[in-house]
Image 1 (cartoon, rainbow, N blue to C red):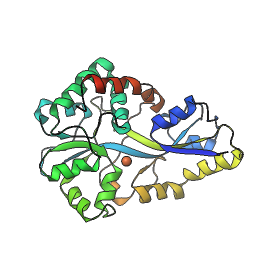
Image 2: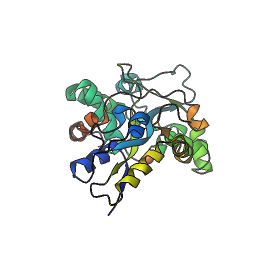
Image 3: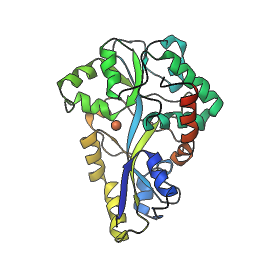
Image 4: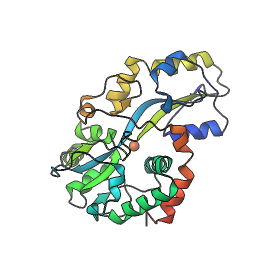
Length: 268
Ligand code: FE
């Protein structure tokens, strides 16, 4: 008898709706705090915090000051790119966003280009991108923003602090200039919530300035509420402009994205 369902990755939230275990919620507080592309149009789920898919780059690449996701496929990065499995939800979300923008055919060509640029097999975790830049295996890679906070703050241990010192972070955009790709943590009110009113109150609290500040400091996430405080380590990465594509629309491309990963042999 759950009241609130909480999870990460908008794909998981969309799956909850499709499984029929959520209910629509109408709340002025939630709708004014959360941008429309980061919540379900019918109120079945709401994003509560954001994580950006960012570029980790060798700190000595002085000419590199901006980056587009499309450039990951540029042959100038041949043998210089590190990234985790293409099948991981973080990368499926990125590839699904590319499909929403450019269609499956262009995305396949892009993915093939990224695959051809890999310095090592697409595997491991996001923080391994920083580790492998320090180790001289690669020069750039894609990983989540909050790991920068975990590594730089020392919360990941002294070894990871060294990894973080080897990198600089760039917030990429898509070539259309729209913004940086983000994923979310979020919540839904359960279909049979015994305490619906309190469930909605909890969600409304979680988008308050106080709770948004806790997300920002505890896990180095971006608040979902525009203007809420960001941890100084994350603030130092520069202003985040969130790509405006509706997350529900992106989630519909997940199956195609996974098929493209197989088709180009991304993880092989
Ligand atoms: Fe993670």
